[in-house]
Image: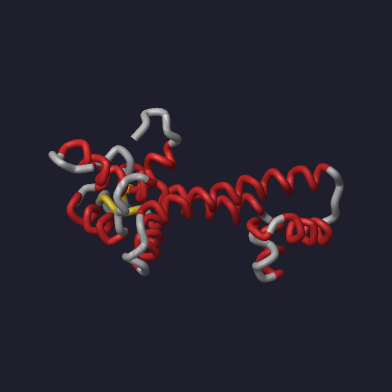
Length: 169
């Protein structure tokens, strides 16, 4: 593996890490607040007990629905969600600065790119999004960041095995 290969290329060369392995790893870890990548996903509740952030719980439940998927797929989904939110924000800022009215803005967004989510989504969702894009995409980005951290942690386990265990690729 070339040292200057782009990160996603290097990650793609790792053996596939099933989400089921990630979920098992998290159970074995016990205290996520001791892991530098995941510590911010654990908080202290009203009784002073450590508790997983509700977003972590939701993302783990979502990932658990398809344990055959891989951490690399989860990583790409997270990056795609973050990318789409960033592009939507940039496009909307430009179109609003040009003085486009809200209804025309929705039509223009739907026509610009199907990957931005407006062509496939319900019209009500698009109007809700347009009313408060920061809240709508902020929630998406938060979920994607948790997914990204979990995916990277699962993939790091595979890389650690390759570095430490003799005969690993």
